Length: 405
View 1: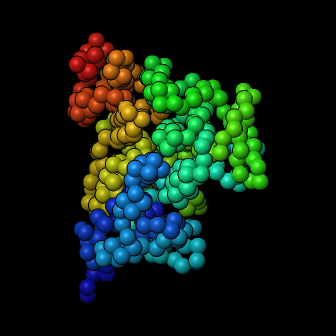
View 2: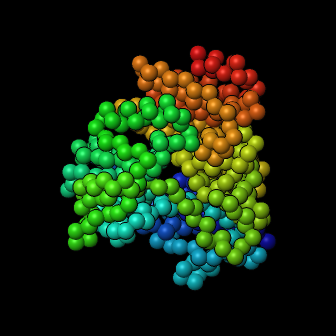
View 3: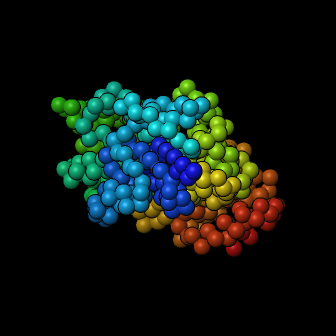
């Protein structure tokens, strides 16, 4: 009797989920792979959204797959479809329609959702935006074309991307950061000052230790903000980069262990047989640093999707990539590699600034091992940093400066 084709369900059609589905079908052409996405779009490139809102990347270049391409690959793609429950004992996923999908292995790659701005006047206001999805980006771009001024609140990567996008489109931009600097847990005071100088040189008004206290509206559309310090600023748009909340609701009622994200081992397996996690939502055991790690990057998610698929097929493949996040800073560049004090405040740090070239490096150490870094401007040290993180060789304090020679 012929063996029954294996059944796989992937919840989340971002790059982790899509990569998983494609890897499953490539390695087992007889398997059934169902890919669920709650948006109306097949895979699009989130990395392309910042240049999209600057009018530097056309709409058609943002999308990476079509519905037809999924069908050609034998993937059952279901858009605008939400998984509502998992029966881990019966190995089924229930959809909002009531349909139950059986699985041999399940991947949860649900990512996170942006935290909304929760102040008087913000809820339901037109031209108040988060920046996570393609629909957000399209609405932001349309509003940019009809606006002259904007505010941004938050000290995150998303906030910088919004401030940069608004300013490059010629808007007057006010950026409010609750803390003393951008990425206050990753950068020290010197690094934060460099980022601030770059933004100010490009015309952004920087407001530190400030928050949005109230959104002022006119017929439901934002017309200005009042800051926590009592300042009144007239703006026509407001972007919020206030962090993410991981989408864990589908696991409610299961024994799958979660913390900030879904806890997995180095194989991206959860504590429940047959259930895996990947992408932003996975709080995975990072074998390079021997600690759990979360970093929602594009490359990280691709590697997760591929590794999860191979393990769902029965292999024992360890995820060992070093996570990395990259972004532009107007005419400069930032790259964050590996582990940072954002996740583990007990790391030791070594910094170096070349003020003339606006080049900054901050290295992070755990038990004298290099485990992470933040680079601004000069990227020549990137490969050396990767090599030392991979090697896990001890680097005593007196030798750390040599890493940047």
